[in-house]
Amino acid sequence: MSKQSFRLAFLFAATYFASYLTRINFAAVIAEMITDMQVSKTAFSLALTGCSVTYGAGQIISGLCGDRIRPKRLVLFGLLLACFMNLLIPFCTHPAQMTVIWCINGFAQAFMWPPMTAILAQSIPEEDYSRATVLISQGSSAGSIAVYLIAPLLITLWGWKSVFITSALIALAICPIWVLRCPNVPPARKVQDAAPAQGSSVRLFTPFFLMLMAGIVLQGMLRDGVTTWMPSFIAETYSLSNAISILTGVALPVFSMLSFSLSNTVYRKWFSNPAQCAAAIFGFGAACALILYLTSGKSAISSVVFSALLTGAMHGINLMLIGLIPPYFKNFGKVSTVSGILNSCTYIGSAISTYGVAAFSEYAGWHPTLLVWFAIALSGTILCYICGYPARKKSGIF
View 1 (cartoon, rainbow, N blue to C red):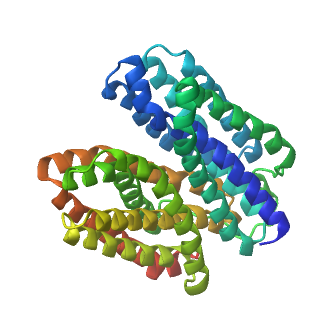
View 2 (cartoon, rainbow, N blue to C red):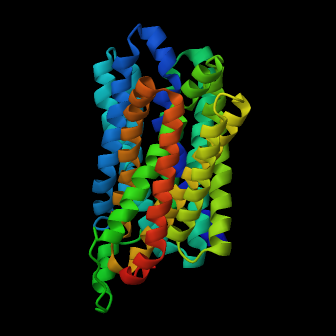
């Protein structure tokens, strides 16, 4: 990767790091907030659920805007609004107030990734794009790790409110750097309109595109479903303490950082398009889910390892389908739009799994739930395989 591409990717990674600081912090300190304010878990969970909903819906709006408004401005708007919402949380006295503010924060956070992909597609060489995307994605994992490591210290010293204030101040410090260092590229639509007409039009929501969306929904179900409920699965299956939740809070983002790099290496060496690579990674995830099902109840270490491998595989698929596919729509002026639509599918899957895994595991138990995880991974493998071979020849995109 060239120095210019690395510098831009590093700026984006730092910005994404700040974004995650101001979004993941609520979940990291929710236990302390419940204890301090003497409020039920259900009341606070509404804020997290609402944030996911507005974040997913905001991805589509952000994507559409990113192809029509200068994307640099959109990212700055989202980051400043997120900072403001974080600074308001310490002044809230009721969970309902926090829910409203955190829903707005979720919408603000949606103005990060789609505009960034639009800027990258216009600013760096095509051969540097995948490596730049890996570095940016690692910024999100680093943000999660930082929250789970720093939050306990801040809570001990100054209470949970200091976590939100510190997160906002760090993100605010990134804003002037973003303004000064980020290229002010024009909206993709203006670039496309200014180019000579070459019949460059594409219709979204074709069978090919719908299959990609379905695959991403399945990826979101496993990525966030396993991450959210693995501690409960381990604790209930092996009668272990809840300390495992702290371990997974730090360990899974660390593993996701490794999976981003490994997936990109596999893609660059052995595959001709992202959908093919996603199919292979989904297949690996299906194997991990099957082993997890077959060994459940026999070894806690084995369950943790294969759960982590399954989650890591989903992060790799996320990189392939959401990080690397949108630039294929560059000539159609829809990089940001496609990025927003595809990214929103992840959070449809996340919303389904947040409630679905809990309800199904309570009804049928964890063993059948693990079999469902295998079925989801296998279905994703089939969908991505179809997208990567016959459909790609008809689409003209890959």
